Image (cartoon, rainbow, N blue to C red; front, side, top):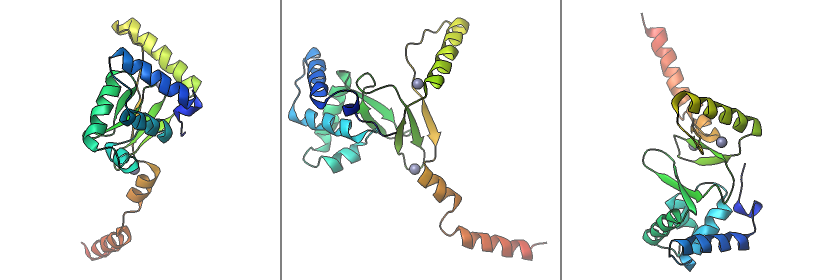
Length: 177
Ligand SMILES: [Zn+2]
Ligand SMILES: [Zn+2]
């Protein structure tokens, strides 16, 4: 499930490609941008600005954010919605590989999942049928699955104080009409 860009291309190849894409939009591959690309490639999952601040304390948040916007414009970085308020960042899919996301609504954690070839075939058949019906010509898709990660699902099933509430409910039930 965890996947880094180093599995699909060498780190040197990655930096060369990023430098090229930045050059195409008249931007330079500065050391700050290099730190970010290195961090995104190593993470293997979408990272938040908080993760970046933690892992690259030498890079001020404001410049990290500016670099991410520039890298996004150059087609190197993609924004992933973690929930309605927060975004996470990852390397563009054509640099890594096509994947989907599991998004936890509770802790906003985002995990990458690689779909099976059978799923992608079914999706492609569905999109072809959709095109025939609606005329919409799709060339890509994104799939974010929303829910609770395993840790949050466990916490939701067994909330702290849940046993006490259970006892209280029993007492109320017993004393009720
Ligand atoms: Zn969670
Ligand atoms: Zn897909």
